[in-house]
Structures are given as C-alpha cells and as structure tokens.
Image (cartoon, rainbow, N blue to C red; front, side, top):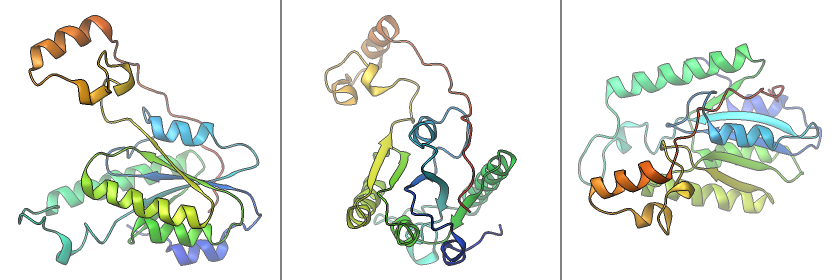
Length: 208
C-alpha cells in the first residue's frame, strides 16, 4: 500500500500557523460513517483550523519481534494483518472520494504526531476512539506526553458499543454492570435506546 512518509508530508505541509486537528484512526474505527470520534474531530474543526487524518502501523504490534504477547500468544496473523490492510486501503479510498487524504505511517503514533506538530506553533488537538486495553492506554499516555510538549490536547471519544456507557442505568457506567446477563438485559431494554448510526460527516479539505 503506497503512502507518503511523514518526513515527506511535513516537508510539504502548509505551514500557515493554523492549529491542526488530527484525527487518529485506530483499528476499531476505520470508517467514515457511524464514527463518533471522527464526527467530533470534524465538528471541532473551524475554518481557521487545518484537518489531518492519520493511521499508524505501530512497530510495537506490527513487527516480527513484537508479534507475541507476554503469554506467548500471537498478536497478528497473516489473515488478520491482510484484513487490516484492506480496511486501511478502503478508508484511504473513501477519504480520497471526499477530497481528503489519509497519512499512513509505519511508526509509533507519538512519533508521527510529534513530527506533524513540529511544523505548527499553534495549539492543536488529536482526537481518536477511546480504548480500554492496557497496551492502547499506554500509547495514549505517550501521545499525551508529546502533546503536552506542544501545548496540544488528546480527546478520546467512546464508540465501541451499541449502548453509550453514559446512557446505562448504572452508577459508574460499565463499572456498575451486573455479572449476570439477564438482569442487565432486562434493565437496559427498559431504560435505554440504541442510538441511530451516525452519517458520514462532511470531510474538510486535506492538509496534505
């Protein structure tokens, strides 16, 4: 899958001093439609902001030496990797059809984001889908450290379940869910509605 490197992108980037709103696509939201995080990024992007969409093949996951968990399980097999490549390719096509580009990099998200923000002196934002697993949360912390250096912010938006945690009839959202399914189902069906899928947002002009 051909893609310009981050170095090539930053060398040609429009250094106009505007803030950059970066949407960081992760493995669970590689689509334009029904994407709460992408919708938030774009709704937060004013005409005075630049918009950039990125996806990172993180070497901490996508490399032979890092392809097993501490318990010896394989993180990515050949078929799963090919499926992900197909999804990213389809996402790039969808963005191009909407007048935008997807910056694809084989690097850690924190490295990619820092290289981008080095070209802008304005306060910028990175938005992505909220994750819950330990490795993803560790990456979030690394990204926050980079953004703090550049006076930027990281905004995470939930979008992984049919029900929004804030809508659940339990104190503490997910933390209050009972261990048995039937009581959960009965209470949720009576008190919650599944939200309608979000339409694809209008994509701003590309920074690339």
